[in-house]
Length: 97
Image 1 (cartoon, one colour):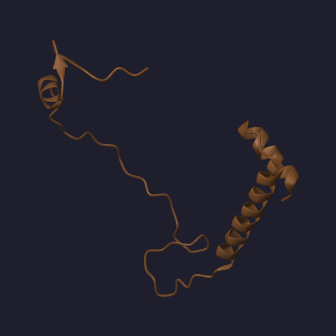
Image 2 (cartoon, one colour):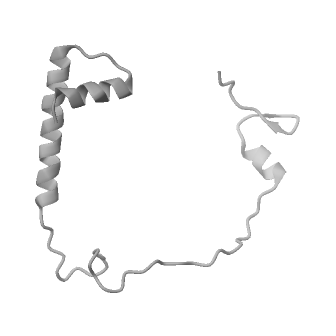
Image 3 (spheres, rainbow, N blue to C red):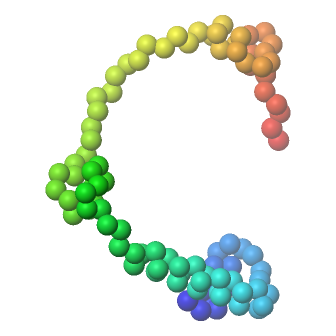
């Protein structure tokens, strides 16, 4: 990673960065990437742990379930009565603009 990569990222984000900030971001990005490399290199022992599938383990498969209808008690009156503010059967919300 170099200054050109930081400049490309800044252009994609449509922000202007002074040279000192570009250098600081480059330094931070290198630190982040080094930390990610450290994390990737850690080997986590999973021997004896049940229920943690790994990519190479046998028996990994997609779990499917059947869709089913669940009985729910929704009525217009119930919903309107639970809403903080309503008028003429309509739910009132704050104006968003």
